[in-house]
Length: 103
Image 1 (spheres, one colour):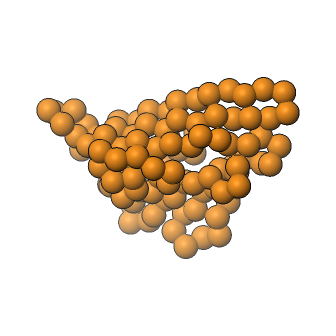
Image 2 (cartoon, helix red, strand yellow):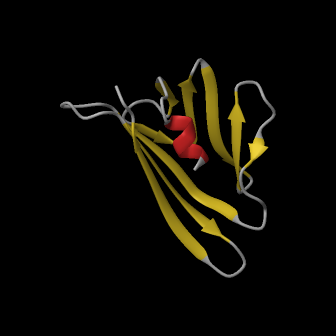
């Protein structure tokens, strides 16, 4: 949910670069930088120069966090796709998040 909110109305995505992928999602919204990354299995969110805030805990590890940024093409808007796994003591579940950015 935090991902969707951070990307809604975003003016640009700086990481990963267009048509690239990586382990960090960083965008600009209302002049402020929003950053998501996984540190030691914990998903962390940073807004501007604030102290990074954990969005998950050590009890549920985030693994295989990959962010793909597809550039706009042929009238289609830019697309951000995030794939990741959540692993706890009894299960492993895979997730995919997709957001199209308005132009």
